[in-house]
Image (cartoon, rainbow, N blue to C red; front, side, top):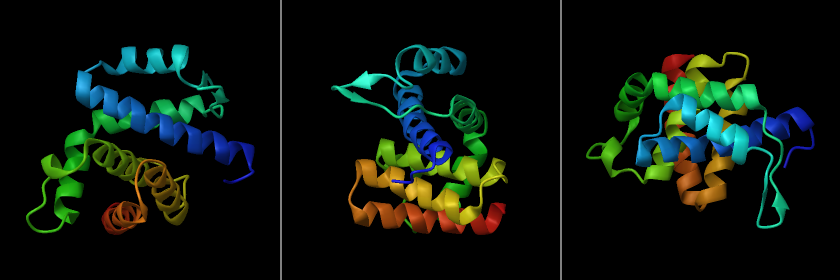
Length: 149
């Protein structure tokens, strides 16, 4: 893990964003309520006696609200990059949120270099999946980056 505090805070924000986007997908929680719930109860909290790294809240908010707001556009990019026969609906729900968050960051956060953004989202994927899925995230986000950057 990166020892730079800002980098750690952004990594924590990305991980929390996947959780928030997953909740939005599964429960339809509105954006404002979702952000508020994460601010109040999740970000920087202790879970299973392990303190979660303090997330960069503004970055978290941007990734979550931006991904939700631009979901159709993001899904269009993702659909174009998936292998033939694959659809958004076939993807694991957590995987989909990782790809959506990563795509949004590539589209909207020009302050984050492409390689850094992709690497970070691959690390997020590794928190949930094995190397094979992490390589899948790398490939899809690299293809999206070529279109949106």
